[in-house]
Image (cartoon, rainbow, N blue to C red; front, side):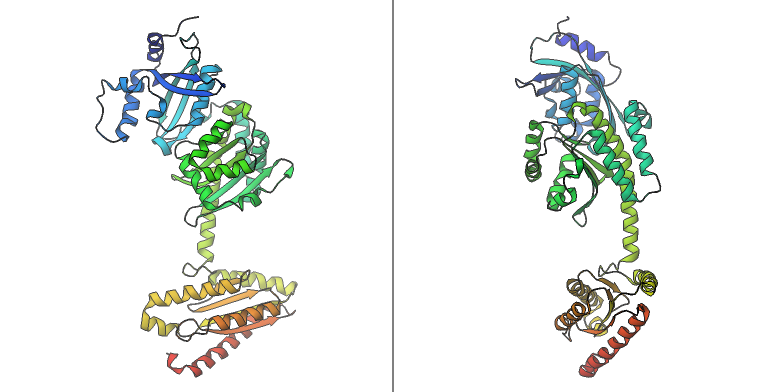
Length: 481
């Protein structure tokens, strides 16, 4: 077998028609991947590397002619972030003699989609602990769908099945649940879940999950996660297109960057994990989260999950957009309670339901006394603050009830709480909203035991509220304007 010298490996790199570097890969005594270095590069790799990375590192630009000398022999981490996924494929190519071809979204890192090709190099190394592989790549500003078409039949079949499930007529939640269950079975993992993230509100939601034999509740586990743990994931995925933990060394590495997250992984006996971000318009909107998967087929699983996540991202983005539209059409943007449009729709639906199936309910009308005086004396900014504080007070007291801003200074509550509890809330509101110079509600309410006449109940509550308002102005005539 040929002795692998620098000259021979340099010739090997120069034969490539695309950017190519022969990588030296060390095998540690325990059989794990050690140092990876750019051993020999071709001219195309030198130019591409110079254009992409040298200009982003600050300081004076190195001389191009001598730039090769600053690359060859260096650890790959000299200019690039440490990437366990990349190390894994290099080790497989160099030591396990696997041929690897992947197409990944690296636009957040480099602004390009990347096709990575790794070929084992046969031959005897001078150091028995070092093996070599060729690393070649192509870059595309836009996603090349033709690259996806070249995936293996089993991957293509699974991706197509997932796409068909996503595009059927089922509800979004139903489709996502079905795909999540398929992903868990395909990856032979213990658990799989899909999460969405709202960075503005600093919240996240598990929208689907699947666990082997339904042994635990993923949503319950995530309910104990502080948002800062999910927030830490974005910093991790900025340096890669997915996080993969396949062995203790990977977990130790992630622990240096996200110790609180790894603490939860260890507590839940997670030994292997895949975390794939959903990136829409360069923003992370969610994640595919898989634990304790079959690590024997890592390359196939990684390629499959990244392809599926490409389509999941589109579905999640569309779902969040529709959710946002619904929110904007139903929620009063100033106070955060439901708006009049939502109230009208709900009253129409509820009136019909109560007509055919009467049940006890309560209606409350709450009108701010003196808002016009505050607007005139303190300006509309102060008046807006009064409305915000008033809505917050109602939300604090009437937890679980629907609160609507029916007009400029009027709020309406429809509640199915018991009459006793509702009247206790009314009394608490009177005690906390009785400042004639700030929050003071005129309140009217009505309890319907079994008639089911919602609109009539609303009229009675409104009439009672106006009686209460007149009593306020009789007591504070200077507030009437």
